[in-house]
Image (cartoon, rainbow, N blue to C red):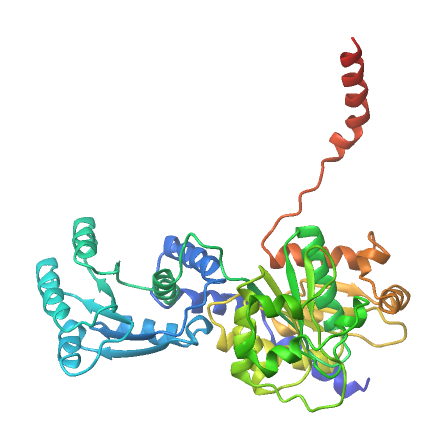
Length: 456
């Protein structure tokens, strides 16, 4: 690598300040409502609940009196969870809504803000009821925290009453609760795996992590291989590729639970493949709505969907990343990967302000005779810790690939297999339960004592 390239790396590292970026991210999450620490905790809790509850295709109209409330709804409308809903925001409160609906049908949901007294609010709602269509839900945003007022509004048919100031996550949680059954199983989580550069091993990370989720965490997983012409999921799991995902994307309107079960290739008790055809007989131009529809159906039938996103930049690939619940970026320790990773992070930060930052996997570290950026310097430059560092091991990875096996099947105690297990627990918010060493050491003695006691 040239001296100029190394200088670029040093300049990038010097210009990055991880502590500053973390502080800016924290401020961005808190500035929506100037909330105290208790509300910040509530936001994080709401984010956890909302991660698997996207809002359906409904029309929503909000009539606000306070500009801060209107800004909060505008911010929420840009979040991925509301991507399918149609949300419009107007000023004027209940009076504006009354005027508007005199000659217009009401949407699926009306949100009304009122800064009036409880008596005035209830009287205004009585007038609004005269112009509301059957089936329209109403949410009231008030500035009076009164349990008796809340109960009276619910009795009059209001779907929910919430007290300002609000945060975008509270807005999304409120709307989602109205259109999802809290007692039903949550919609499955989508995890997108993408490489910051071609050939960095993103597919390998995706497949091994999905395997670890199914085996170590014991959650059902579907791997969706979106690299239709060159996908390797079938090869890595020693499965004969079927049309699978290509057939679903070609006619997404036909996909249902029965057809999905027929198109999936079963790898183990808890892991299935939505395989790519892996042929060049046709050109695969994917459609954004088709991708959305297929993923919606898959996530309704399985708890975890691991998407292997190929290294390309199209409208559908960008949409898949922006709509995913979690994102894992795999990078190699060189300058091109550093630049691309930083670009991806900046895009995701600006477009996904209420989501976790992407997880970073630094792969192929320690390749012989190759100049590399150290994991510490790489993390400093991108402003995010490299969650997992996987050392280069050509023999181990090559053996697994040629045998159609996962690393844990080839070398369960290897460092790489441990990294994939750790990533699997991190992505699923689970904790690995390990038996204490002391219990293992005492087990033979306790067993002998039990046998003696039984014999007596």
